[in-house]
Image 1: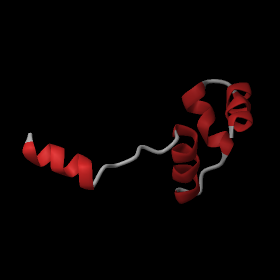
Image 2 (image 1 turned 60 degrees about the vertical axis):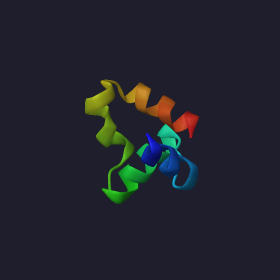
Image 3 (image 1 turned 180 degrees about the vertical axis):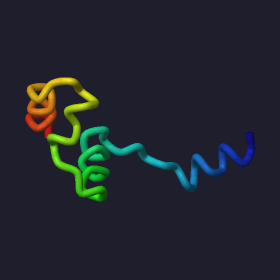
Image 4 (image 1 turned 90 degrees about the horizontal axis):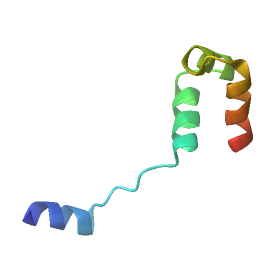
Length: 53
């Protein structure tokens, strides 16, 4: 518990925004929006993701 409290106070990790994390990951892997279609089932849903950015 002591180590956890110390790490939280001195080395806390801020989680990234999910959209930014996904965009970064896609850029690192040279993926395009169309590569998301198998995971979201519809091209229109991928377009919704673009609107959120």
